[in-house]
Amino acid sequence: MSEHTLSGRDATEMLWFQRRQTLQAAAAWVAAGGWTAAAAQQRSNIVELEGDTTVNGTALRPDATVQTGDLIETGPKSRLVFVIGNSSFHVRQNSRMAVERGDTLNAVSLLRLLTGAVVSVWGRGTSRSIVTPTLTAGIRGTGVYTEVFAEKNFRSYLCNCYGTVDVSTASDKVTSVSEYHQAFWADRQGNDEVTLSPGKAINHTDEELEFLARLVQQRTAWQISGRKGSKDSDYY
Image (cartoon, rainbow, N blue to C red):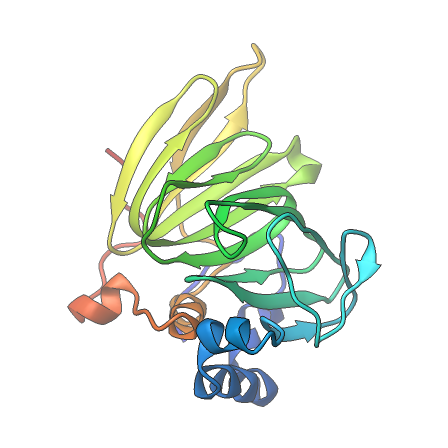
């Protein structure tokens, strides 16, 4: 498994994609035709569901469908992997997020992460964004890891694992172009400003990005190029 650094999370959260049940669920999803077939046949778009998760306040069942406009909440030791359109998502435990509708019912225009963490892979399409309490990320076709530390004044972390992301706060802005993990912290200052600073890759691995990309018939930038760089690159 690729090298990773933990910050406030357990190592078992990084190993979820290695479980036999998870691999079988992913293989079944791909073999059944992925999102296109699921939408045409009105099947569930949930690849894997573990523990207690609610959607709009109601307990989520494995045969249900996560739709744009839904508010998702995962409990302790819970997680959810699902696909909408050409984008895939892994919502970690103790997370609260909303997926908002884009041009169509089956397109996500905005992912609003209120607390917790989510790994996401986005296919190319119209302008889409990830929003946390302290930052906004305008994304194109890319893979992203996002985490909100509620206990630390909603400090936000975003890693542009590959692709192009426009990261902004109320008082700072930068464009990140990455082929292999370029990370940022968004911190509130005493004067109510929110500043960006470079960070290291934490709490996510190459393998889970590759796993999510495979669910939507994509490959990561390092799979395409056949090489990996530094995970501690400065932004520009």
